[in-house]
Amino acid sequence: MSIAYLAQAADHEQLEWLGGGVMRILLDGNKTGGQLTMLRSAAAGGSASPVHVHAREDEIVVLLQGSGIFWAGGHRYELSEGGVAFLPRNIPHAYRFTSQTVDMLAVCTPAGTEEFFRAAGWDLHTDVVVTDVSLRAQLIGRIETARYLGRVLANVPYGKSSSLRHIVGGTAGGGFEWTAGSNHGGLVGITALELDADQLITKVTSVYDSRQLSPTRGKRSWPHP
Image (cartoon, rainbow, N blue to C red; front, side, top):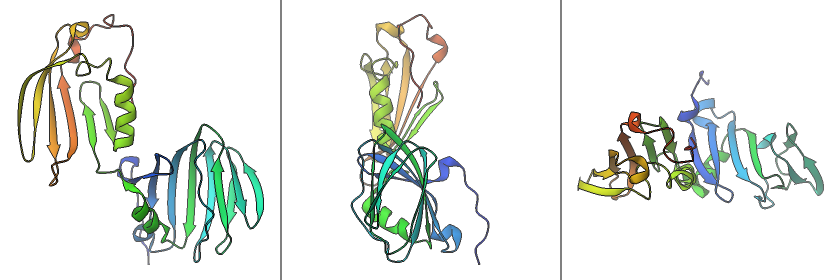
């Protein structure tokens, strides 16, 4: 018998999937007593699945945002935002997204498909966590982190124009003190790093006094995640 389970968005397991997209496992067999799996996927336009068959699961797909073409049982269907598809077990099917971005919810019953995605995808949930305390920004997973830093590194105080003042560290982590570039008035801050057993960075936290930042200094604002 299954028991009630509730979780916040930050608790969901995250996997890299379909051309750099992110799949979140909202519910798995452990949480539902084996009854169903619920997945939510964010993917880029042009992403597609190969033709495949579920031998034991029925699948329901809801397009929360975006559009796509679905093939099932030899037939072609176009699905737009708010559309739903029921894909029974043992029916070959595939899909390709045609919009720029896609937000898709999938429910498979009974549970079990999540194990395939875990084996084939890349676990992002504990991959890396980047926190900017002063901007109240936090990124979880290397894809979100890379996209965010790609947008802001030219503008944040610890970005491309900063210079190192002091570095400390050991096998478990460390940190460095930095001075911001002239466009931030020489603001000083600290960035701390945490490492895993393989000496890979798993957590980056930057702290500085954001009250010293002038709203007129620099022409661009910093986007949040």
